[in-house]
Structure formats: C-alpha cells, structure tokens
Amino acid sequence: MLPYHTLHEAEVALGRNLTFAETVWFNYSANKSDYFLYCHNILFLFLIFSVVPLPLVFLEVKRLVGFDKYKIQPKVRLSLDEMFKCYKDVMRMFFLIIGPLQLVSYPSIKIIGIRSGLPLPSGWEILSQLAVYFMIEDYTNYWIHRFLHGKWGYEMIHRVHHEYTAPIGFAAPYAHWAEVLILGIPSFLGPAIVPGHMITFWLWIALRQIEALDTHSGYDFPWSPTKYIPFYGGAEYHDYHHYVGGQSQSNFASVFTYCDYIYGTDKGYRYQKKILRKLKEELANGIEHNGGSYNTIQDLKSD
Ligand SMILES: [Zn+2]
Ligand SMILES: [Zn+2]
Image 1 (spheres, helix red, strand yellow):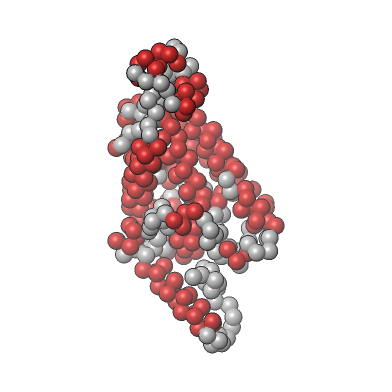
Image 2 (image 1 turned 90 degrees about the vertical axis):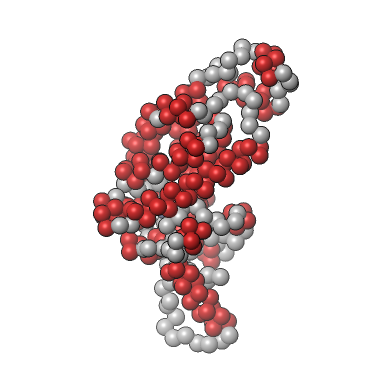
C-alpha cells in the first residue's frame, strides 16, 4: 500500500517525475496491501513449478531426434505417468507446506524491512542484491546439504529428495517436508541481511526456483545462457550428485561450484570428468573398447 493517493502526490513526495516503471508500479500496487503483494509469491511459485518444466517433459516423452544427445543420463527415461506422479507429490507439498509457509511468514518480511514503496530500485541495485542473495544461499545451502548427507540427516530427511537418481525438473522441489522448511532458511537469509524492494524479493524467489528446476532438468544444453554465469554449476553438475545417490559426498552446492572446490567435495566429480575425457579422446583416436557400455553419467558424451 503506497502512502500516496495520486500520481501527482507521489511525484511531489519524490521531487521528480515518476519513471515509466514507477508509474506502472504505482498503478498496480497503490491500493493493494503489502500482505497481498507478498502473497503474489504463492501464485508465482505455483506457475513456476507447473509451467517451467513442461518443455522438457515434452522432450522426454516425444524423444525428439537431435535432443537425446543433451540428456545427461540417456539410459534413464521416465514415462508421462511417472513425471505426473512427481508433479502431484510436489503440488501436495506446495499446498500443505510451501503455500501456508508463505501465508504465515509475512511478519518476518516486515521485520527485515522489505519495502514496497517508491522510488523503485535501479536495475543495478536489483542485480547486485540478487547476486548477493544467490551467493549467501549457495554458501548456506552447501553446509545444510552437507549436513543432510550425514547418516541421520539422510535417513530421516534427505533420502526423499534422492529418490530420483536421474532428476527431472519436477523433482527439484521434491523433498521431505522438513527439508522444504530447512532450506527456506538459506533463501530467506540473503533478503534478511540485505533487504530490498518487494519486486527484488519476487524476482529472487522466482529465479531461485527456476535455477533449481534448471539444475534438476536432466538436460545439459551447450547454448544455455547460464553457461555465461561464472562458477555456475548447472544441470550436469547437480545431476552427478543425484547419480551417485545417498553415498554422494560430492557436489553439494546448489548454485555455484566454488564451495565444493574450496572444501574439496568435488573430487569424485572431477575424477569422473577426467576419466570420461580420456576415454573420449581414446575413442576419437580409434582405440577400441570392448563391451561398449560404460554406464557412466553421460555415456561418454561429456566434454
Ligand atoms: Zn543430496
Ligand atoms: Zn537435487
């Protein structure tokens, strides 16, 4: 809810004309409560969980020629029914845990100082805050995830998320309810330390989930714009974590690769990459390998 009744009042208060974006924001939000604006996240998350994975579901079902080579674990195929079951499980979690959590967590947003008024933040302010949020989330999530791979944490909680050894987009939020709650902490920490505008908060919640869907997509496209993000882990990086499964002590980080590098938890992954590269080179050099089935994460298509 903005403390101005008209655009003119807002311009007088700011001492300048409103930008186009500020005018749009004024027209949309002036008569809406902050609580209602905050709850937009429920709709955004519902749409993201439901719509973003669909193109790859289509690819998985149709098995379009030319796209198979981008599948990280090409031998694993899920049927439409299996993928729909995953979606239904995620939606149950969404309506029982994620949605209600959004409804009741509004006071925390007020306490940390997420604002909804004018002026709007600049593009650079939004981008730099999002970068900070991702780094804080990545670091905190790394340690929580590592803890969840302890005997107790894995058996009691994290085992559920690892039911998919070859993940699909829908499986990104597929987890034990306690994990959903615990991993809300890293997502909340960034905005709590560096509070920004409601729009930045919306973007953060949306981008974090889209990133999680991307890293669980099961496909590694060389043209993905995320290839240009420094130290970005991506689908192949996290897929290895699922491929190894519960015993995995590698690739814990949720977004970037540097935590695993610094703390030495990417050794298995890097070793596998090295072996695959070597085998690929040998194949390219015409050296025969008997058996033909390497049963590796990328079946020798890795670079
Ligand atoms: Zn894990
Ligand atoms: Zn995962």
